[in-house]
Amino acid sequence: MMKNALLSVQQMTSADNAAIAVGIPGMVLMEAAGLGVTEDITRRWQLRPVVVLCGPGNNGGDGFVVARLLADAGWPVRLASLGEIENLKGDAAANAELWQGAVLPLEPSILSKDALVVDALFGAGLTRPLEGRAKDIVEAINSLDLDCVGVDVPSGVDGDSGEIMGTAPKCSLTVTFFRRKPGHMLLPGRDLMGEVVVVDIGIPEDVLLQINPQTFSNGPDLWIRDYPQASSVDNKYSHGHALIVGGGEMTGAARLAATAARRIGAGLATIAVPSAAFDAYAAGDPGNIINRIDDEEAFLELLSDRRKNAVLVGPGCGVNGRTRMLVLAALQSGKPTVLDADALSVFANDPDTLFSAISGAGPVLLTPHDGEFARLFNLEDNKVNLTREAAAVSGAAVLLKGADTVIAMPDGRAVINEGAPPTLATAGSGDVLAGFAVGLLAQGMDIFNAASAACWLHGRAATSFGPGLIAEDLAKSLSGVLRALEIDANNPP
Image 1: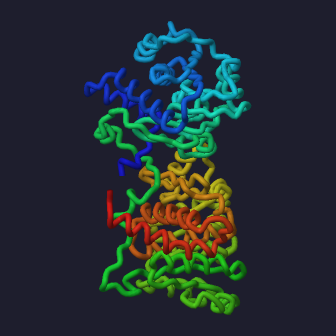
Image 2: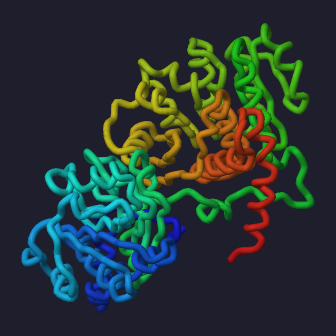
Image 3: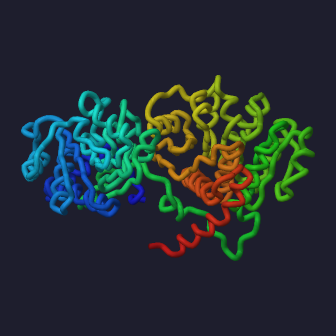
């Protein structure tokens, strides 16, 4: 799990300080950082003119190391500093003294059309928008469309939130140290990173035990040990029975979710539907069981069956009193429950009733998109903090969907998902994601792990299928993804 840890800017400072406290000099860490950037530059590009932009802090110190090492390797290097080098302090000042070349003023005129730019202006430590000469030269980099290497993060991108503070260079490569930061994965800053490379600079791994990170990048390392494994004595009942509520009009949504639940391993999937829509549901997807429910009593009878051990309400249900009633009944059952789409929107004007019901329920996962989230939660912050706060307020696991999906628990744990391709912007893909989640819950997976696994597999299935994706393709593509995951799990590195 610690391999997937993401460190805030403050936590990374703590990691640096902890390494220094156990006897690793700051100069050694800075030299290793500069060496890592240099090695990635020389691996990626052939000999060419380089312009290194150095800022007033340790990020600038890294830049002085990069300039010196590239010059020693025979690369033509020009270095420009923001401010007087006499004002540098500590390790940055010491590395500035080791630079034997000229120090030029930071002006757009130092850039040439064939230059490779190394952005060592501010890194993740910047707390305000770029201005003055720094802003001018970043805008010139983007205007000239130059290859740019970000040291730590592109200057102007918030390392914690991914927010672009006014402007920032669009990088081809970003080299960071020890662990990535949330800002490397969160939009819109993520789109400016290019390839992100993490360099080991000698910080001991055990400093993570002191820091105790609570934010992680999503991946099988986090949840594979909890992932359902089939055995020779299994039958369909031992693989769980997902109960999905369907609506009277958008009948495809619940059918997509039910098929997805079965495809990810649930032994059975029942769709509870209004009698008037029974024929539409029964006409296709023969593996799904269709039950009529026209009132709360009929739904409670279905819920009373202990074999139906996970519930999904929302896809295609409609924003109406029936949906509200079914959500509250599902929560009262104590079964693991996924609430998606209309099951969230129906409480837009009364979120406290929903949160109160969740407080007495079993494990609950909310899967809102941005609009549904805004209607339920009156919160403002970066995406990770937003999702954490929403989980704490609601008492549920919250999966805030998007190209940079964040999943958080009330206890503060959070993951950021990457790898969701733009092809997922198609009707029904969210229904499939909810189906994957309820299918994993039906098989007994922990709710945080189920949400994380469902999200990761959803993105991989979309990537595996490629262009032309529609929601129906996601469950079909899952088989190949699961086969590869099984191989990886059985052959660890």
